[in-house]
Figure 1 (cartoon, helix red, strand yellow):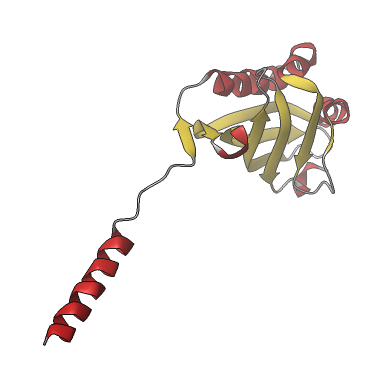
Figure 2: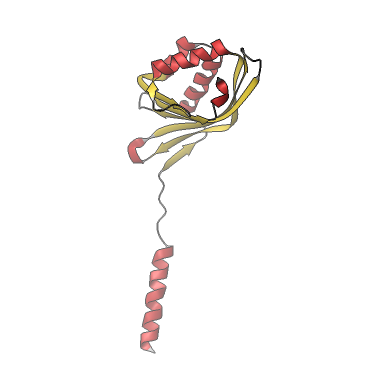
Length: 159
């Protein structure tokens, strides 16, 4: 009988330790933050075709990537691609979907804004209306500049 009680107590003790694990966070999520404002302003200036201002949001060494591109490219090369959008399309808009979040991770002190958009425009070549849902991730440095931006969406209709 003592063995059964001892075994039951031991199992009960192990069960308690398993279910009483300490919770731990990996960082903080913000709904309002200055880095969110940077992303919102950069998108506003892109749509306004105001590239003299857009480049100020990015560090000189920033890298950019979007679905369909093989690897990250320098921000100066990305800016050329963005400018070419206005050669191919009229009425370019980026409409915010939901709200952006600023994620500040403990590990590596990563600072990322994630945001969701619908990119819309009218093709100058075909007259077709194009709508591309996309999610954008902007990584920041301690100076508040975007150092890496990556965008996921189906951009195959942008030809």
